[in-house]
Image (cartoon, rainbow, N blue to C red):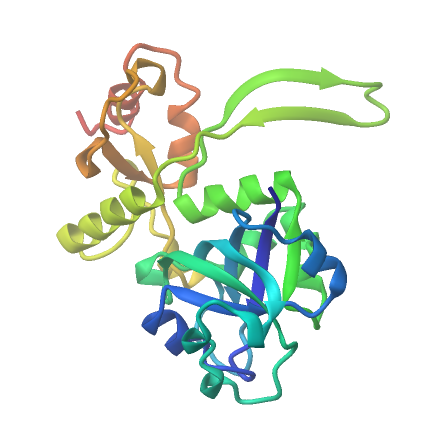
Length: 269
């Protein structure tokens, strides 16, 4: 399985209208190499470029490939090609079919703003962010893991095995990331905003918006993950909304109940 980011430019076509109206979409695939690599089941993020708009830009949708690339005359559902959304000549007549699982067109809905990727040393070097041209970008496993964590608003850093070479050369650390249901995280954040009027850390109160110009928070499972039994269901109320600092801290508190200990540190219990 291969992972991708597909980039859409609002000067080229109305990406917002397309994603708002449909969860089955087609995307142009220009290069033969990419056409050969794409397979049914591949995971895909949709990236909305900034263009001339002042709106936030970044990751706005996630889905999976359900039709391998073919000429647009051979697609299974030509009614979803919707070429009227294009403002300029299409990139390629070869199209890949994608089933969109989630769309987030603004910060409040969970759009992953570009700045979050630019702050990461590895992600900031991706061709997506450095190349002016291109619509299909293949992700390494490491890049996908980081981007998926940002999309879920959840980074669970369980420091596991570590392999080290000569310290004068390089060091490679292996981290494990637990994939959390992105819809559950989104609903938990929506619920928090509805109750409190904004997205901020419920432990220390930090709010990204005044300083950085966008809202951001992560979701933390109040019950230690190693105590969750197989098949146990997680509810919105089981997730806490926290800033990155408090999230890192709670995963480094060694106790039977690190969440309560974190709240005690901040005088919340």
